[in-house]
Amino acid sequence: MIIEDYLKDQATYVNTLVSTYLPDVSCEPTILHEAMCYSACDGGKRLRAILAMEAAAIGGSNLEGAEIVAVAVELVHAYSLIHDDLPCMDDDDLRRGKPTNHKVFGEAIALLAGDALLTYTFELLSCLPKKGVSWELTVQVINELAQACGSGGMIAGQTLDLQWEGKTPCIDVLKKIHRCKTGALIRGAVRCGALVGEASNQQLQTLTEYAEHLGLAFQITDDILDEIGDAKVMGKPQGSDEDQGKQTYPAIYGLEESKRLAKVEVDQAKAHATKLPAGERLVQIADFVLGRSF
Amino acid sequence: MIIEDYLKDQATYVNTLVSTYLPDVSCEPTILHEAMCYSACDGGKRLRAILAMEAAAIGGSNLEGAEIVAVAVELVHAYSLIHDDLPCMDDDDLRRGKPTNHKVFGEAIALLAGDALLTYTFELLSCLPKKGVSWELTVQVINELAQACGSGGMIAGQTLDLQWEGKTPCIDVLKKIHRCKTGALIRGAVRCGALVGEASNQQLQTLTEYAEHLGLAFQITDDILDEIGDAKVMGKPQGSDEDQGKQTYPAIYGLEESKRLAKVEVDQAKAHATKLPAGERLVQIADFVLGRSF
Image 1 (cartoon, rainbow over the protein chains, first blue to last red):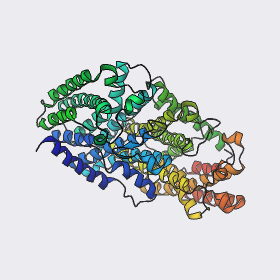
Image 2 (cartoon, each protein chain N blue to C red):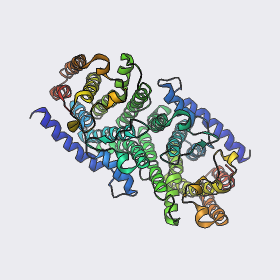
Image 3 (cartoon, chains in turn purple, brown):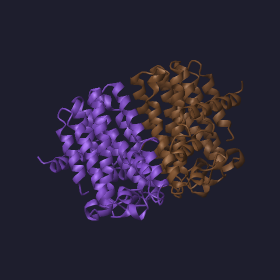
Image 4 (cartoon, rainbow over the protein chains, first blue to last red):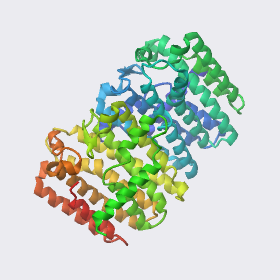
């Protein structure tokens, strides 16, 4: 099967998993649970979830537990998008081709839905022992994900992104923003998957390096697509980073050099993946990230 | 020592604990860590933290672990206040006698500081094993606190509170709002403390009932103080609930009947506390909640 079809099938499977594990929209207060589902249940490439499951497959244990981790990282991703889109942040009206959460449910419910998704992430992870994951590994996964999306990880990235809006582009800042804002959660997804799958220390280290290069490549291609991508395919307006004066790779390096740098990162990710038993799929995913159009 | 002095000393101790366990404000991004500390490091009665430590003392184990739980519940409380005060929620300018977080740091940083405090809560709890708490109890505490502050607990309460603003007061709704919005975290604080302290099942059950009655009493007195309290002592404007058309006990029952109902809850809380070995302090705390002026 070509990798695009595989990823599409896996994304559909992740959608089912998220719907299965999220509280039902008929739970009171229904408006809150509807808002949670609106942003979490349907959408995106599900790359973080897929990476978590692929990383778990390297170790090969607790694959049902890895599905919980996969859902958890998607819930964190969904919460971060809801809050990022709020008027006091990036003030975006469109996400994945539909109106942003606050455009549908209002700002207050959107804010609370984000809070609830983040909270539920940790409730869900605390249920890992029901899937046979040890208490100790469960605590390690919670620690890992909390660090990835906390004030030294994803939220640090979002803070820097806001602080440096409209300022002269600076490569050191840009790298830090990308490493934190996008990279930390991709790295966390891979590491949490690997922990649950009981990868060896050596495998965990190799997967971590894979994830760090892949995460940077992903964000560089994101910057490129924001500048030249098809708004219809991406589901959000093109050029919004530039309009908001964001720090991006094309703004600093230009388009062609940014493409080259993305390829350098992907090549490094692939070099790490090839060291792993059954790392072929991770190689293909890295190629997909470089060639993606959405 | 009279209970007021004891609680004041304990609150000071909790302030020290929070400052100790929160990331230093010199950590990058400093603005984010300053905003987190601004709302978390100094303030309030620290009742939830004190209850967690008192509940742990009933079982008597892992008292250092109980301090981590105490900090965790205060971080959750601080995050919820930052988000509640935002313009899209209650739009409050003053909290504990100082400008609200977003008035000082702006809405975007306030939102992120709240997110970061919530995330850090779970990172901190995942460190309980370093204080001798078992992996299994650590997972149980994380599950308990996530449920308490999630979409079936505190966030459900906040959602209902918003939805029913300005509508005809309704006693069933009011009780549900209070049980979720304030009660769930107080209950969660007591139960998490009891779990870490390794209380027996019977003690955990008794402490839970104590916490449920105390939580309701606390919220009724909060409603009363909002109507008749001294703004200077409380550190926020008086009458804001009424101005916002909130569902409150005085709005439904009037002041005198509300006071009587608070006393009924406190008496029930005390009846449960007296069943516990060394429950005297919990009895005194219940009396304090009834008589408090801030």
